[in-house]
Length: 202
Ligand code: GRF
Image (cartoon, rainbow, N blue to C red; front, side, top):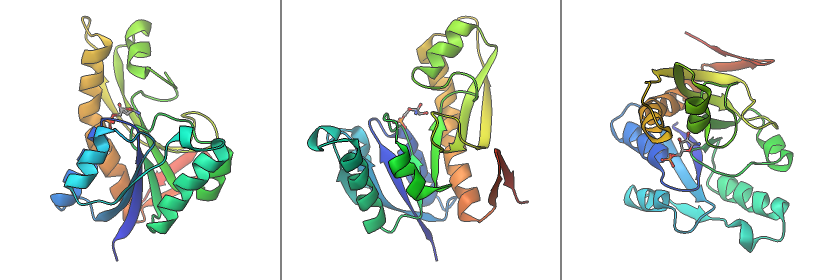
């Protein structure tokens, strides 16, 4: 039986699109059971609609507190039968309230080679620091920010004349490969976690 994933987004949704395309091309054997957005006007919602994927909008401002916000996201995912939660450009930090219920079942894509350049504006941080390589990381989510066990990373060169935008564009190409690849490894039951390390069965 095909495994079900839930994808949480905030905006453009190009990583969601990459997941949708990999599934359509037969390269990823999962179903996106639901897309959850914390913005009602996220372009990602149009992508979900076009692909016939059910969506739920859960806005922080419509909730009493962060716990209620996370409870609603949790309910949308569970009602859809999601077995893995994929954060694909979700711009909020989830708290332990949510994360403890999905231990080792949440993955995130971060546009930097962790543990460098955590948090916001990772590509700008990389340009400012003057690193010669950058990239992206797919990792399991723990209660820290961008600190969970790393599943895989992809590297790109940084050019002398790169701006935050040109570097972000180069990294995004790799993000669109890395996230579906990590989901595929999970769906094939090939990921195991021991401490900080993720082992990939061959
Ligand atoms: C990506 O760069 C992702 O790594 C970061 O936010 C961006 C989202 O892009 N967390 P998109 O919404 O998937 O197009």
